[in-house]
Image (cartoon, rainbow, N blue to C red; front, side, top):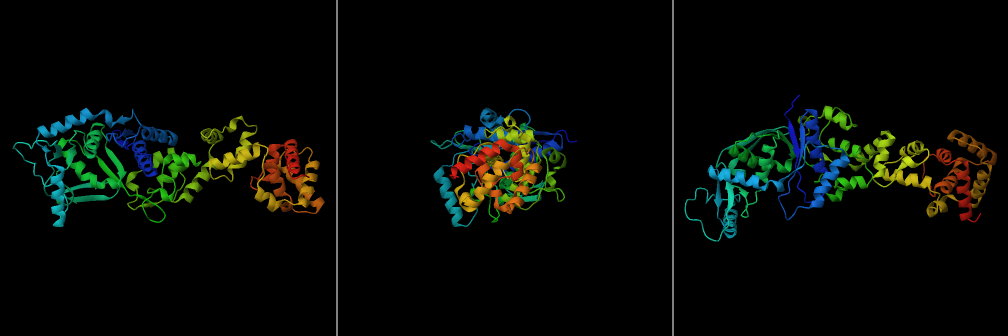
Length: 463
């Protein structure tokens, strides 16, 4: 077992946690668990203008809801600015970085000239070996002395060998802005190295950052981690996943009544597979997951698949676990008589927790209103008479079988079929035309409550 394997998830708190980000976090988490290593959480909050405390709390909340535990304390980059300055100074002292006094206007002119010559816009290194007197009135940035030619390559755990020509992708890029704040690529390298991160699983939108980071690892004498770059998640139309494809904020799924077990199971399969298996618990994934088996191709988001998984977990998770999630909506089944029976009644057809809550309320609460469309469609003078007689003849039935037997006898005696009476009973008991098995609803409510609800409906109809 690889005891020294350390992975991390490092979001920027500029908005909600995207489900693509959660998939990245999940893969890092599972790999660490699989190898007996550590999974760390780092908040990259150096962009003080765009950062949000609410977004940081939302990220922590999403992790808690999903049950992804990280090791140690959360690391905040905003607390490490002095540390970054020390390493910037180290590179300056070793002549591996330099102050650049090129003004914005000069950079704009350089870019225009390069574009006119159809060249890739890049800094031309004019201050790389500057020894003269700096121009006045310009706050310098700090640039790394990047290689001027050659190739940067690494073996990606998903993509295989990746090569970049230096002249195609690199220039002396900035590692500290004119106000002294470090840039993204610099802080990532410092933190990953000092946190001893051994394996970095991230989206392939970071692929172009990797050669820059390798330059910095080498300049600072740090060990380069193993990289795994994930293909993006696409919508069913083949385009990059966005809000138009549905919810993208992790916590929106909670609001929709999706179980975290279902969401994690769904996300892990967006790029990774184990034989033809579809259902995985988190503990099973911790034993099976290997990032080397992640697909190189983009995966396709399919909400119906998520809904199918959610239905599975609603049907199979223990009462206590379902109720724990229901409490998040302010709904506690444990205080309800015959709560286990009611949940089993509802979860056979529910796709979300919201449907369980809605179904439970329709059974627990005597209707104050009735679905107008259902009443118009299913209720008539004839079945109101049958409904009244049905209620009058209910006596001592206790379970679904007894209610079913009694109902069949009543139907035969009156020369009618179940379809002539069932919806009338359902509407009277629940207020609508949709519910679990009517006989099980009758069992749950009991004879006296059923008689009362039917009488209430008859009063409503003036019968």
